[in-house]
Length: 143
Image 1: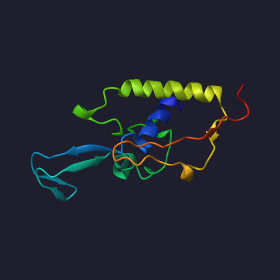
Image 2: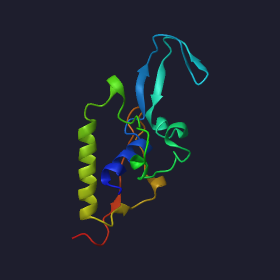
Image 3: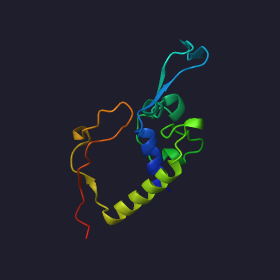
């Protein structure tokens, strides 16, 4: 079944906490999908865009689906980096988010947004990716 860890993974893929990784500079000329990138040209990696790539995540890559992480052959996302640039805190972040969501929704099972998603104001940051505030309704079953 789907668990909170699946929700965390799909959320990371769907809306990466870091929008872009700082510029990287190729040490030799590269060709990516027919586009030549000359040596030394600044390259900006868009983690959020990578999470929506249909060639990696399927034709429904723009759809939020918590069953996606558990599918056979499900692709990993790049939201927490890769290789030498992989976030050292990733295992802790995943664990904290999984535990926090489980506890939050156990305590407040009717928790819901108090505004529409379109009304959420996002920080204007080149690197970070977050909302300024997250107004919620706790629901009627909390005590």
